[in-house]
Amino acid sequence: MAHEVGQDFFPGFARLDVEAGDVSFRGRIGGTGSPVLLLHGYPQTHVAWRLIAPALARSHTVIVPDLPGYGDSRTRKDRPRWTKRRVAGALVALMDRLGHERFAVVGHDRGARAGYRLAFDHPQRVAAYASLTVIPTLDSFASVDKTFALNAWHWFFLAQPGDLPERMLAADPDAYLDTALKKMAGGLELIDPLALDAYRTAFRNPNVRHVMCEDYRAAASEDLEHDASDLAAGRKLTCPVLVLWSESEQRTRSESPIDAWSRWATDVTGKGLPGGHLLPEDAPNEVLTSLTHFLAGKF
Image (cartoon, rainbow, N blue to C red; front, side):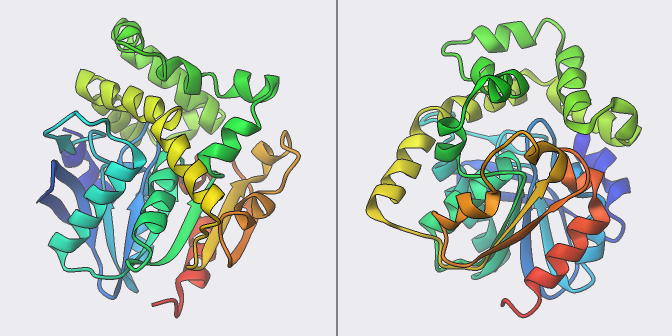
């Protein structure tokens, strides 16, 4: 199973095995100090943080779960849909079970979307928030053009209603996953073979693929409504926000991620980094340096 393979990637970490709300969370936990919650993205698992978490654990308690329904984390109730708001609530329940009242949230890709929803809905819990390769969902959809649609076609495929995407993914899960990761990484050979095996193992589970589809369906519906409500009400994140992005991805975009996030938060810093979309794996040293500086003294 993916969490057993993942043990090799997190030396000194214990298994995370916690029942919280409607989720059986699995992943890793390690280190001592102020707590940091690391949230992975699509189509990965907590293994995506293998190059970041051990170093962060030298000064922080690092919690690295599979998102609800991803990897080995299992959801017990599929309705209502697992929107980012519901995911955020489950993550708060997880941190409650672990005894962490206030913590930092670092998210990549889909994990970053769950992370900023957590910070909006539970501001008293989040001491600092870092977003890797993501701007808010409302802004992402507003910026859709030909380039975006061709590069991020899965946004629209996975969000299709019914079970059409699930049926199509079932035909050849490995081929779909490999195609997605090859584009994100710039080549499958750039991904650790053991990590790739963990991602493939998780994606072969039809329940995991269904949750991913529901994730994108929520992004195109409920998540957009929640973002629009916050923007209309003038609500902003008040915790410090760090924004890291891929320099290669940014070349196709006209607006700086700093400018985008400044509409949603009062204290935004950030920078572009070398590497592609999978920053925690493409540029781990640069990500770690930025995170270490950002988290110092925040809580």
